[in-house]
Image 1 (cartoon, one colour):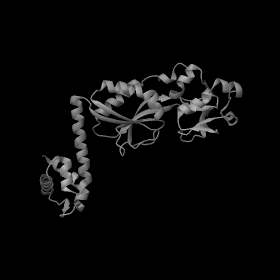
Image 2 (cartoon, rainbow, N blue to C red):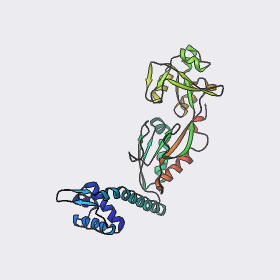
Image 3 (tube, rainbow, N blue to C red):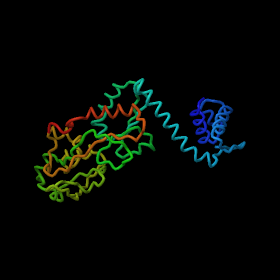
Image 4 (cartoon, rainbow, N blue to C red):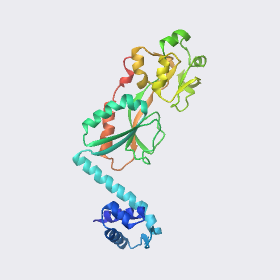
Length: 302
């Protein structure tokens, strides 16, 4: 076993605080694990571990060495994976997070086509409307809607989505259509609890952004539920176009205040910074960028 193997053994022993437990994890004998760590210590000229009959603990030098050693092994593994993937094609498991409604309505067909194109890759997809911590939760990539705040991630823009305000023809016939954003104060509104501030809707009037406070007695944490209520005439809803497009095409919902519509929201694929980007992440992001290039399907036909 080479120097990286010695370091890998040291990390396993430090994490397990046991030569026997580390040896089981590495599929070697405890004697071999002890020999490899001792060889590393001899090469460094420093003791990394305190050994007793009952416990193994890090020395001060070992504690300082451990973080750097872990980063070195991670870098080495990433480099090997990158080269191997380049030679053999992407393989392994790709863990992805995506928003619930966009994932179900727009991303799911793309994911199945991606799986068909890369049969050596497994997909593990979690639909959640919260922004997961990619590194801490072990995700390879995520799809996010809206303006990004986490500058530690690499982002690639995939598309945009209009945010539309809409109501059923029956509601508009009964209550009339608002002519200005301020008119919403006299209308019933269906609120989406997934929005950062459900009670404040942004619009653009005379070239500047305005925020209008709205109120409604129906509130749901799913875009589809909000639109279902709007279709039944319970009030005016506001949702991304990728959710509302089918209802708008079919005439079940009508646009409200289109002249005051806010700026579209960007849709990005994001992934952690890495010196050697894994091929499975690269091909996934490239696939989505090509799939959603051009005018989005959800902006057409209404």
